[in-house]
Length: 265
Image (tube, rainbow, N blue to C red):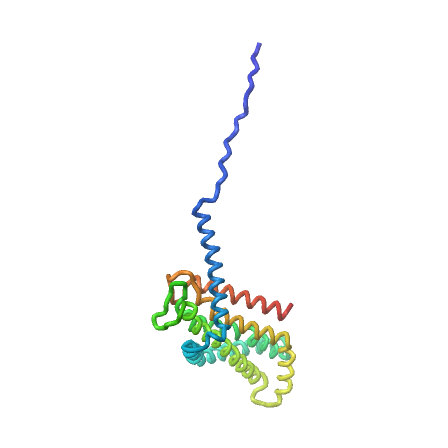
């Protein structure tokens, strides 16, 4: 008789579950602590910029010098850049509107596009690349050789205030200039277009839109003045680095998206 044999099925050994190594855990922990540290330093610098006691004594002189250095050398170049950009965009929009029979909406579109969106963002980017990114990154161990402040945040504060003032000043003056260029492009030098122009401006700049524009400009200025000025290491303390640019770009993009939601939704 045949003997019955119990055949056990062949099972493939299951690979052991991979567990995160100590290096990965350390890397993630360092990344989280770095993000928290950057936010904490930014909050401290923002609080220092809003503190009246920070504008006394020698800091008052440093703040005035920083405002002048961040505004006066940049004003002429930015006005020329904004004017050229406005003329080009206005010509393109007016020509396209005339081709499609929409000339009556062209001026409204130009003001909404240039004054509300383009000019504040352009001012923030211009001040960031021409001024803020030329300043040192201030970390816990960084000291500026020419300033004798009490801490690294005290050293960063004058430059941050200068950048904030510069963005607000350039955005405001250029917004007015671009509006005048748009008026001259549509109505010429004739004063007969003033009533319709002022009526249109009043319909655009409602209290909600004006508040959103003011807040967006202030937050743009704060981002340009504070975000690139903070860091956790002393490496690459000057110039444009990928980390500083990425942080600032993310903040500006977030502010712009929120302003669009506030204006159009």
